[in-house]
Structure formats: structure tokens, C-alpha cells
Image 1 (tube, helix red, strand yellow):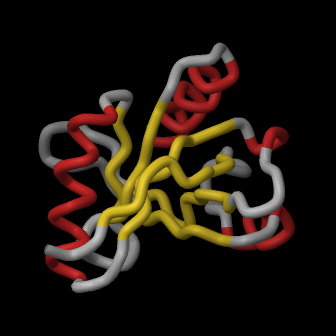
Image 2 (cartoon, helix red, strand yellow):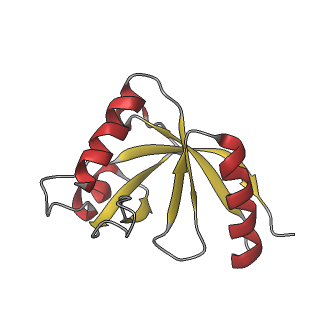
Length: 124
């Protein structure tokens, strides 16, 4: 189940493992990885395709969110991809209350994450 993926991600972040996220070229597509270098390339591609600045975020525990941070939330868990990979529609919101309202609850309340800006990419 994809909710297992989210719970594993939440547990890893709670243990101090670094994860990063950046938006893709469609509104609910996000890329998540532990490799900052991998996401830098994707963030630059997104900035070029979207023709506006794109932020690359460090994913943090939602309890650690401070002023200026956001929340990264799965608004819909989709069927797994043809290779078994989890697929989700993500959204970035400004408040914990909004995160709790928009998160997917189809398989139980899905975890959501804090997101703090790590780097910004400008279109080339």
C-alpha cells in the first residue's frame, strides 16, 4: 500500500534521515529523494518547463515547522504504477490546519510533512 510508503518516509525523517522534494512539471507531481544532486537536476528542469522559480525543499517533521515553512501533503493516493511504485498527488499548503483538511484519508489519515526551502532554481 502507498500509505506504507508514507509511514516509512515519516519514520525515516523522524530518525534523522534527510529527504528532499521538488515539484514536477504538473501541478500535483512531486519528486522525493534522499539525493540532493538528483533533485537539483529535476528542479532545474521544472523551473525551465514552468518558466518560473522552483523551490527544492528539505522534508522535515511536521512538529519542527517554523515561520516561513510549509507542509507537503498527499491529497490523493493513487493506484500503484506498472512497476509497483507508489503514486500520489501532492500539494503544498501553508498551515497545519490546511494539511489536516486536504490529506488523503481513504486508507486512514495519511502522514504529512513539514517542508523548508533548501534551494531555489530560476528558469534558464
